[in-house]
Structure formats: structure tokens, C-alpha cells
Length: 375
Image (cartoon, rainbow, N blue to C red; front, side, top):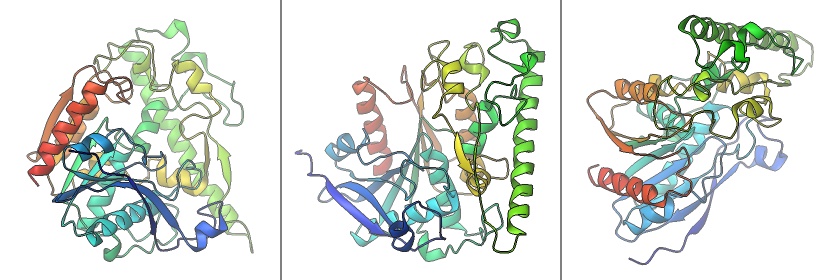
């Protein structure tokens, strides 16, 4: 069939709080953008989304449209900037996209969560089926309403991270000994210190993972204390930015025997692990107290498997077997969360982005088409 001409879509959503965006216009009249591939006679519409990445040109949109599935590549209001991102607000944006699809006449909606979008769509569906959230982790009320969150009929997870807080818990560098100093480091806890590996001993890994949790818990405690201090001041600030150094230090990047799959040893999803760990723009590098608590801290409400377990719809899991950022243990966590209603499909040799792997993009689209037809 001839591919549809993509439509640029603008969707207005209800305003949030001041400073949830650097744009005053975006605060007063929040508008999110997407690209819609409309297929006549399509019974199901899919929406693919990520908290911050631009999915308007997502690689799945054209092949899914060629297979007869209408598709919306949707962005949240936090496109390209997660400093003040609130996951609780991001699901409201996704809800606006689902509502727009309903207004186009689609009674069946498939949520596609790719990469970091996997936990977002799980969070959304859990709240759409049963709205429980009344506030963000920093204590501010969040004005979500059932009308904001129309439940979907299915979920596809592709190259699926478990959630931003889960990523941070396994990627954060525990060797940092001074949060204000990029270079200050404890050699005994440094995965890049050749004396520690790779390969890494079971004892080192146990100490390493424990130290990661200690650092994250310390940061959460500091963020909460700092918020209390700021908000106790008369006419004081309600938030502040900060830098989170060294956030890509997962031993699995250097030791391919850990959580083994088909990935290339010594790589990360973005390049050489040590360079990315210290990079100016890496995961969670620039954040705020409220953004950190909502996204990256252990208290985040956006944990993927926890939320997926609270849903009731069918799930398709696409496993990229050469991914250097999602692993067999992640696939098992998703599978357990949706036990009895999940279908798993492997994309053998697929890296995280399916870059230069057009045959796997087509295979992925085939699997999604077949899954959508069953909804």
C-alpha cells in the first residue's frame, strides 16, 4: 500500500505548575507535538513515546503504516530537556495523545514504549486503569483526573529499560566521594580501575551494587532535606538545579559475562563506557530536586515492572539481543510483571537502536502488526 503522508499534530494539554518549562508560553498554554501516519480503515492506532526523546521521526512509524496500522509518534512537553521533568506530568501528556486518537475515531489504542518509553507507558496504563497518584514525590499535589488518562488496549515494550530510577540504580558510579568534584574517586569502588576487573569478582560486584544504593539513598536524603530547607524560607525558592556526576558505570558494560547477551564487550549504549561516565551530557547529568525525585531517585513512582504488574492488558515484549543497555534480567523482570499475558519476541543481533538493521526493523513491525490485530 502507498504510505500515508505524515500529519503534523499539535495537542493542547492542561497547564501544570510554573517552572515546569523554561518557556512561559509552554507553561501557560502547554502544547505537545506529534507526527501521525493515518491509515484509512485502520482499526487500531498505536502511539510511540519517550519521556524526552523526539519520536516524531521514529523508525517504526513508516513500516507500521505500510502494514495498515495508524501510528502517532508523540513527544511530551519535556522534549530534549529533563531537568524539571515530572513523570506524573508526562503521563498526562501521553493521555492527551490517547484522547486525540479516540477523537479520530479509534476505539483500540496500542501503547508502544521504546527504550525509556517502556516504563512511561507502563506507568500511564497503571494509572489509567486505577488512578492512585495524588502528588509528586516531593509532596506537591498533581491534578490528574480520570478523564486525563484513557486506558489503552495493549502495550508493546521494545528495547525496554525498566525505568529511570532502575537505570540510575545500576548505572550510577559508587566511586564518587565528593558530589561537587567530578574527579574525586575511591579506587576500591571504581569499576574502571584495572585492579578491580574485568572480570569482576562476586565479592566486588556485591560491594559495588551495595555502594550504588548507598550513593542513591544519600542523594535522595539530601534532595529532600534541601527541599525542606528551601521551602521553609519566606518567599523562598521551591526547587533548585544541581549536577549529578558520573552516571554510566554499569559493570555489565565491561564484563560481557554478566547478564550475558549478544552485545559487543566493552561498550555502552552511547559509546566507550568510561568516556560516557564522565561526559558533559550523560544520563541525568543536569537535574533539579523535584526532577531527581520524580525520575531518578528510589522514591520515583515510575518503576516499569511495578507499574506493569498493576495493569491488565496484553503485552508484547521485543527483546534486542545485542543491546548493551537492556539485558536478559530486564526481560525476565518485565515477563514476571505481566505473567500470563505477555508475548516475547527476540530480535536476534538487534542493538538498542536497530541502527543499520533494517531487516530487524521490519521484523519488529511484523510482530507489532500481528499483536495489534489480536487486540
